[in-house]
Length: 487
Image 1: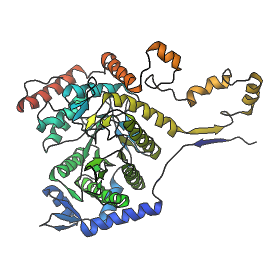
Image 2 (image 1 turned 180 degrees about the vertical axis):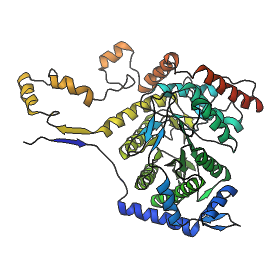
Image 3 (image 1 turned 135 degrees about the vertical axis):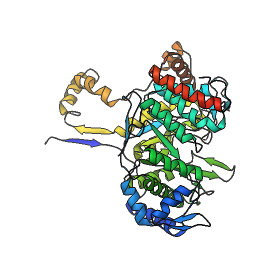
Image 4 (image 1 turned 30 degrees about the horizontal axis):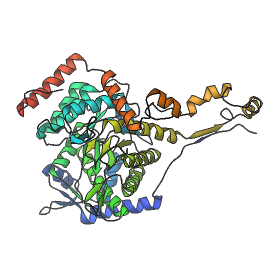
C-alpha cells in the first residue's frame, strides 16, 4: 500500500453557486433601479462625485453595479485586529472563526436572583472579566450600562473592555460625537489606532434600503480613521424585510453593498466586515426572534455571499430568545454556534445573549464557551494517515486486549479528544454525588463565574496609559453630570 495522508474537515453549505450569483444580481438591480435612501450630505457628495443618480427630493441614490464591483474589489479580504498585549491578535480571513459575546445588552440576568434587570457598569466589568478569562471567546463586546447618561454610553461601552481586558474589542458609536471620542480612547491605548486597530466598530443600515444620518456618518468616519467597520444589515423576515428567506438575503446584500461603496469612496481600501443581524418576525407575538431556524438560514446565505465576494464575514448566532438559561437557550445556542463554525464565519457574535438580543448572562457565557470549544473540535475534523492508524497497533491491541496502554494511545489521545472544563458533567454518578451532590450545569456555571470574578486578575494597562484613559473618560463623564465613574 502506498503512503497516504488525508485531512477531513467538515463543512456546511446552503446556497449553490448559481443561487449566490442570482441573489447578487438581484441586489445589483435593487441598487440600480430602486436605490437606497441616504440623508447625509457628505455621503451624498461622495456618491454624486462617483456618478450616482440622485433623487434630491427623496434623497434616494441609485448605484450602478460597476461602482459596486469596484468598491468590493478595493476592500481588503483580510483584516488583522490587534490585542493590547500582542498575544491575542486575530486575523479575519478565509474560514478562521472567532467568537465574541452578544453586544449592546441593556439588561443582565442577575446571578443571584435569576431575574432580568438593568445592566450597570459593574455588570459590564464582570462580563469583561469573565470573557478575558474564557479561552474560546477571543473578542470582547461592549454593553450599554444604564447608570451612565445615554449620550455617553457608547464611550463607556468601549472604556470598560479597554481597561479590563487585553483582548480585541467590538463597540459601536451611538452618537455623532461618540466616534471621535472613542477614536481618541483607542489612540491613548495604542498610540495610533489607524496603524494598529484593536477594535471593530459596527454600523447598521435601516431596513428597508436606507441609511440614517448617524450610521452613514459613523461609517464614513470609520473609513477615514481606518477603523475596521462591521456592516450590520438587519432585515426582519415578514416585517422590515420580505417574507421569504431569499428575499431578505437579497435585501441584506443590497444594503451591505451600498455601505461598502460609501466606505470605499470615503477611503479606498478601508477595512469592512460583511456582517449582519437578521431576525424573524413572530406574527403571533410581535417579537423579533434570533433563535429561529429562518435566521440561521439567512445568516448562512449572506455569509456565503460575503465569502463569494472575498470579504471577511460576521454573523449573529448562538443567541437565544429564552429569558432564562434553560433547554431552549441550550439548543438555540448550540445549533447556531455549530453551524456558524462549520460555515467558517470569521466573527460569530452571540455567546451569553438572551431575550431577543437584549440581555447578557454570565452563566450563559460560561456555558457557551463550552459549546464553542465543542464546535471547534467538530470543525477540526479527522485526519487519515499511516501514522494515525498503522496496522501494527491493531495487532498489538488484539494481543493485549485493549488500546489504552499502547504508546500510540499516549501519543494521540490528547490530540484527538476534546476535554471540556468541569462545567460539563462527565463524572460517574457516585463520584458526583460524593463530591458536591447532584448539581446541574447552571449551578456549575454559577460556581465558575464566582471563581473567575474572585481569582482572575486581567492584565492592567500601563500606569501612565490607565491614568490618561481615566482622565479622558472622567472629563466626559463630568461634562454630562456624573460626579464619579464607579468602576
